[in-house]
Length: 309
Ligand code: GLN
Image (cartoon, rainbow, N blue to C red; front, side, top):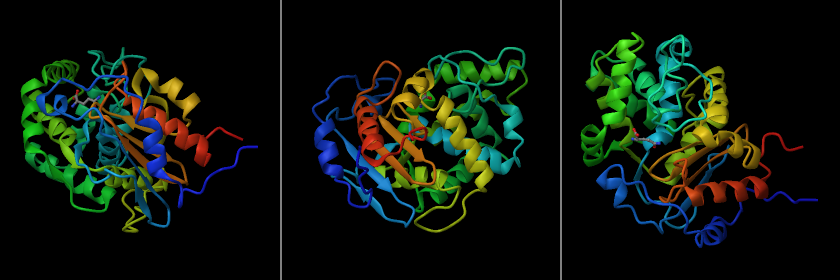
């Protein structure tokens, strides 16, 4: 029989040492600030229902959220549109890469909120009269998830703006389909700034925990979103969060999660905890190699697989 470890005393540095020798994968080179990341970097954190946040060494290393922001953009869009965002974006997995130039056939909507097309749209649905106001609202909303004020890395935001050709293509395609109601420039700018929000694994674990625990931030005790919205977001993370690797992830890790090109992975283990791993080298599907391995071990050791009996 497998003995389940206690997350309150689980040795995160031992887990870090265990995954560190895995040096497969490649650091993302889509923008200079991501390409400059240290491939040996690795940090892991857990956020528990009693508000305890535990991190391995290097857990105060700052990194940009990139696609790990997508579940939270979806949450904010659902909040600010009173659920209407659910009709504006699909929720089916694509089996394709995160930046595939493709919309849902028949509707012209983005396939789901976890791919770039979907996140460009959800970021555009957040409250605010213009791009600047929406970006501020997103930063304030993300800070409530993290339980502390977050900031944008302006250099990364600038690079997202300069190198966002595929995001521009997606935004224009949605304009052509009449599914995006802000300008393409505006959508790319606001989404790019959201990707450039700085966190560390401890903040990201608290964000994951807030989703996992029905919308209440375990550290601040603030209800950030209704339980029904948290449930919708976590459901879509489970089916679409790791792009075309979501099926394998669900079978093996069994915890709803979101990957990103900075090498961050955020996990939301329903009713149990939030977790985050950072390690920049990515596999072919854009998921952190050490992030995946650490998540597998964590799931096994802490008994997190949602379908395990
Ligand atoms: N900023 C990146 C992009 O827009 C985020 C992609 C990712 O993390 N998978 O392509």
